[in-house]
Each structure stands twice: as C-alpha cells, then as structure tokens.
Amino acid sequence: MDTSAVEGATGWRIVHRPQTTSTNDDAAMLRDRGGAARSAVVADEQTAGRGRAGRSFASPEGGMYVSMLLGARPEDRPARVVALCAVALAEALELLGVARAEIKWPNDVWIERQKVAGILIESTDPNAPVVAGIGVNLAAVPTGLPPIVSAAVTFADAHVDQPVHRDTLLVRLLQRVDAWSSRLAGGDAEGLEQAWISRLALLGERVRLNYRGKPLSGLFEAASLEGGLLIRDEETGPVWREAALVTDLGPA
Image 1 (cartoon, one colour):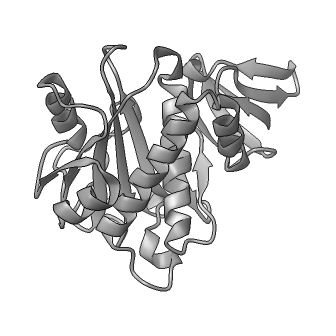
Image 2 (cartoon, rainbow, N blue to C red; image 1 turned 180 degrees about the vertical axis):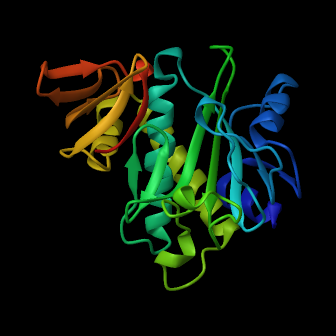
C-alpha cells in the first residue's frame, strides 16, 4: 500500500497493517491513545473481522478493510454515521465504474442485489471519535462461505471494466466521507437522509424482518434515520418500526 500517496490525496492519517485481527479494534486503540478524527487503519487481511451483532466478516487478502475515526455529534450516532458511510462508499464505487450501488438496510452495500460491502459503527464515548469500519470485496468472493451466503455475495471487480485498486477506492471513499461530513456538520442532515433513502434497496417491496424478536412481513413503504422503517402488514396496516429493535430485513 502506498500510504504516503493516500495521505497526500486526502489529508488523512493512514496506518497500514499487513495483517491484523480487526481494524476496528486497532482504530479504537489508536483513538484511546489520542488519535484524532480523520485517521484510518487499513489492513491487507483481518483474521477476526466482525460485522453487525457480532457476526464474523470474512476478510482475506484482496479486499479493502478500513476503520476510520470520525468526529460526530451525539445526535448523529449511530444512524446518520452509518448512512454517511454507506452513501460515501456507494458514491466511491460508482466513481470507479460501478453502474449503481445500493444500500441494503441497515449496514450493507449491494451491487445488483448482492452484498459487496459491510459497515460496522462502534462508539462508546460521545465525546470521542466514532470508529467506522468498512469491508469491501474487491477481487473475489471470500472462499469458505456457506453456499447460501456465497450466492448472495459479490465483488467489485465483477462489475467494472478495469480492476478496482484498493488505494484508489480508499482515496475516493475518504474524499466522499469528508464531503458528507462537512454537509452534516453544516446542518444538512436532510440532504444526507434523502441521499440515503434514494439508494435504499427493497424500498417499495415486500420484506421480511424480525422486530422485538418476532418475525414479521409486509410492504416496506418508507424509511427515516430517526423514525425507523414504515412497514405495512395485513393485520396492523402501516406501522413505524423502531430501527434499534429490527434485527433483520430481507426480501419476503
């Protein structure tokens, strides 16, 4: 990795690890030792990458695994920060030739209805930078995944004419993160929400979900970063479901 080139193009501080257990853990340690916002840890490989709800995230060589330290107001955590990262990543992928990248609520990015990336936001101190981890499949689908999982996963190079270089994607991502962070800090939460909604996969479709541990299904009619998901089912009609209590969402 050309750390100096990425730093020169973005103004971010970049820490590179050939291998690590988790870039989120490394970024948290960097933050706790005084690391400032607009710092990022990038690894060639993670041996214990993780996703939402403690799920494992396969992270072999050939992907982009980065955890960023982001300054964010308490009211922007976690929903707006997740949205910011997802929109920024979708835009970065499109800048490199992907025709269309969508956001699969709450923290995945899809290309052609398959997962290409996952996002994990972790924050314990409202006065300290947020750790925002992103893992992207670039050159291949990770091996060893269960067949049902592998069939739902893709990689960026399958959707572009030229291979996606990790450093180039990282530069584009950090630039888009900066752009959206500036807009959010300037009070444009509505603009971020509209950009997020415009990319939501499954919106307007029948979906299945778990809410308060109970399986539900219905029409996904609307979404809000503050209100959650508006789901219409046959028994109750349209009801807003609080995002924090939804543990899964997928096609019905």
